[in-house]
Length: 297
Image (tube, rainbow, N blue to C red):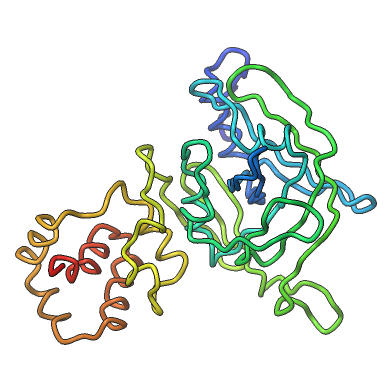
């Protein structure tokens, strides 16, 4: 029998307890929560303390925890206290990078839909917007909020009653059931790890502590690419700043082979070439390649 290590949560730092829980309990579904504040400003953020608990009435519960580092609360929690409505959007693989980017702790009032390049769709029964790219969206009324503590790491159970469901028609079988292969859900694990329901584990680097610039700050020709996917743009939008003209010229000087390969390519072909860097998680190199033409402006 393998040796076990006993961990008493009352004797360990909250950070260690938090990491152990997240590393051991998973995969966890993700509530991509859309709310609005009292000024009708949208907010969008993911939470992996989440699940469904009842069908009649349909009840979902997710928990925005108090931040471990400084005991502050999330904008989502504050919004749900004041405007008791929320859309819980389901996350599939196609939007996982954009979802991750939206978890960046932007200042109050910043629209994470714009930062993550996701589409705001009006709801039918509540005020918060739905994520247009999400395969399933649940419009919910907040029935109750239960604070589980007052210290950093304490959860806040947001008990939501579903009042309207929206399902992408392409996911449905002839009998009206959601095809589990087509929905292609992702779930959260410990550290940087996620799992794709039909394929297994993969890694998504956490958003920068310095705040990613967001997809909205990318040059138009990149943002409106016919080649780059939402996940590609999500990775590019997570950089701390756009490269300077000097950095781009330095990249050109140091990578003559890359410049030679791309010199006769059209825009779509260059974007595909940059995409190959993104597949290898070489985000900086991909962005520098995409921005070479910016030095001419």
